[in-house]
Every structure is written in structure tokens, then in C-alpha cells.
Image (tube, rainbow, N blue to C red; front, side, top):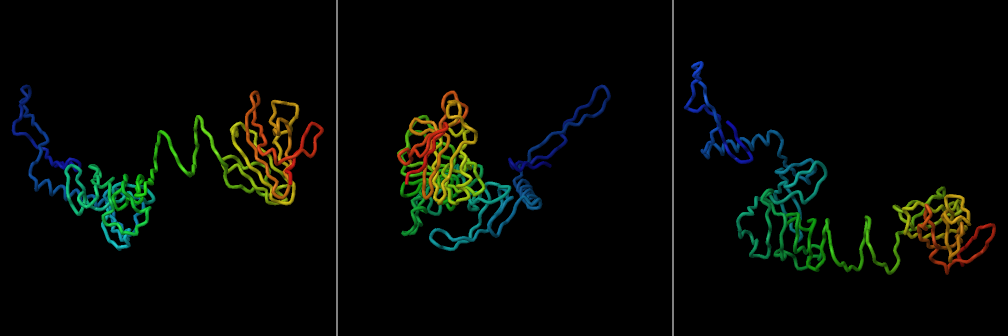
Length: 352
């Protein structure tokens, strides 16, 4: 006997009644083949045995608290929870997406098989302001639209999900895509083309553009270097630095000169009571145009002396053609003054 659990067909291997005789030897040659069994009771019995074997193989688990990986499609969860109207509920959920470790609420849906081949009116769906879309493979709700038929009058705006995708209706508040009543939306994998108008935002990755402008300050919170550190922390940790101790001001700051810094802006502020010297990591010849320099009002300088008690300098890195490193130009020139020049070097300090 052979039962195919995917197609739910049952077959048996049988000897056909008609056989052949080998004319050279006179030996009977038997003919065998697979025959499909149409008896529904027999098919049902093998399906029940198949389900029992799943349990015996521990292919199904029942969770009585929040599930944790590994769990597989078909596992069950006896969920006790409180819905958005603060009503305590006890429901049976089944896993629709397996996970080897961890937990995601959207891996679980109500333990009901939904048929996406026919339209049904059941428990208020369609007629009561909710349209739910069922997936034929997982037989679960994966998207929908709702007007909030059981929504409390004082429900928070962030809970008024009107359109969602990637989760069941109960899990729509954490769905990877959801549109709220007030017009805001959440999209975890958005690819938006065209014009975007926004009042605020936060980027955690790389931004690439061919043109544009920023009106206003662009920067990150100030980073504090330890007293024994002289090297800049690096662009990936933030390019704004605050000098807070005399020990750090004494050792000074060494600016990076690698070409990856091209276009980066830095803001350095010295809030301690000791002057701080800002230098390059190499010995610079003021007359060598191929070396990196600090630039101040079209002048090349080799050091910046940053005054104590909130001395501040804003710098921007750029690559000069024909050079191998970035130089830094001073942006807030009105805040600096010449205090010494000579020996091929120029020193500047923050005006107080």
C-alpha cells in the first residue's frame, strides 16, 4: 500500500490478472502495477494514520505560553491574551510560518482553515466592515481591510489599522505593512519611487542621491573621546566630538585624512578649561600642495588651536585634485582669528 499525504491518494501494488509466457523458456512472466483505490473510507483511515504518525514523530507541538523556536507549520498555541478593547480572550492559534529560533507574532494565526476559492459571509466578515484575504497554501488570513467593527470609541490612533498585509487580522497591529486611520503607514520593506515630502525622518543606512540640498544643520550627537585617545573615532560612530577633560585636550585630536571621508562634515567643541590642538596624522610641509592641509580663508595651515571654554570649529573634508588624501576646510571662519604665524605654519584659535 502507498498513501501520498500531499495528494491524499491511496494506491496498492497488485499483480495483473493477465500474464505473459516466455516462448523460449515457457516461464510465466507476471505483470505488476500500482492501482488507485477509490474507497473513501480506506483513504480516510490512511489519512488518520498519517496524522497520528506526525504526532508520533513530534512534528506537531502544542504551546501553552508564548511560542519559541524551533516551531513548525501546523504547531498549535493555546493563547491567553487581552485584545484592543481590554477584553481577556483565550484562543487556539496555529503556526503558518516555521522558525528555527526566536518568535514572531505574525508566524501565528487563528486556528481556522480559510478557503480562498469561494466567497463566504461569516461572523461579520464582508457585511460588518471587514474584508479578509486568505492564502491558498497556508489556508490563513494574510491581508485585509477593516473599518474597525468592534473598535472602542477611544481607541488610540496607532491602533486604528485600516489596511494591512503580511499578518492575520488579530496581528494587524504588527503587520509588516499597515495603513492607519490618520493616513500614516508602516512599510518594513518600502521601495518608493517619485517625490517624497516629509517633515522629519531618521536614516540608519547609506543615502545615495545625484543632486539636492539640505537647509539646516545635519549632524549626530557629540561623541566623547577618552582622555588617552587622540585618534578620531571614525565616520561610522559619528563625526561630532566634544572635548570634556583637560587630559583629552592635552593629547589633542588627530583628524583622519583617508579619501573615504570626502564630503563629511565634523563639528568639534572644547568645553573644558584647557586649549586643544587639532592636527593631521603626518608631518605636513606648508608648501607641498599634494599633502593634506587645513584651509582657512584660502590659506593653508597645519594646525588648529581650539580655545578652551566652548571653543568650536566646523570642518568639511574634500579631496583636492592631484592629491591622495582629504584636506579639511574651516566653515565657521567668523569664529576664528589669527594668533600666530611663522616658520611655515599658521595657528588659529577660537575668538572668545
